[in-house]
Amino acid sequence: MEEQRSLLGGKVSLRRLPQSAFPHSYVDLTEGGVLRGPNSLFARVPDAVPRTYLAVVVYKGDGTPRGQHYHDRKAETILVVSGTASMIVRDGAEGGEESIDLQPWDILTMEPEVHHALIPRSDLIALEMAESGGTPDETHKVSL
Image (tube, rainbow, N blue to C red; front, side, top):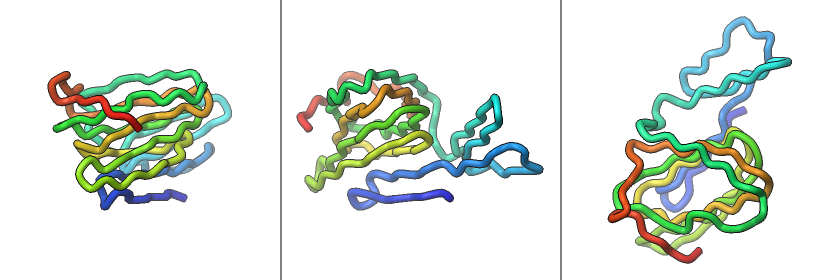
């Protein structure tokens, strides 16, 4: 069953991709999802997720906060492929802060100006997707 949450007044959204197992007659993955077989796995990212820019993120699960930044113009989407992590998000304008536990097939989308830090709890592989890679002049370090 798919789960969705909205945080920080809608500036952050968390969605868990629905999962199905083979054999199947037909599974509609138009809105994203995961198909698991005995020796295979197929995951489709929802069409609504921008992905002109794609980065593979690999971290050891040592609990060290990574990132600790925000972007003026870039919205980011993180898809956890394997491992677990926590994401600390803070509303740069309003000041609210939340900690979100992430597991495989969670998709977390953050609007521009959302301060964020990723804390890997186990060895982590994730995809970062956005309309662009962002630029140094609109990326700012913060302490979370």
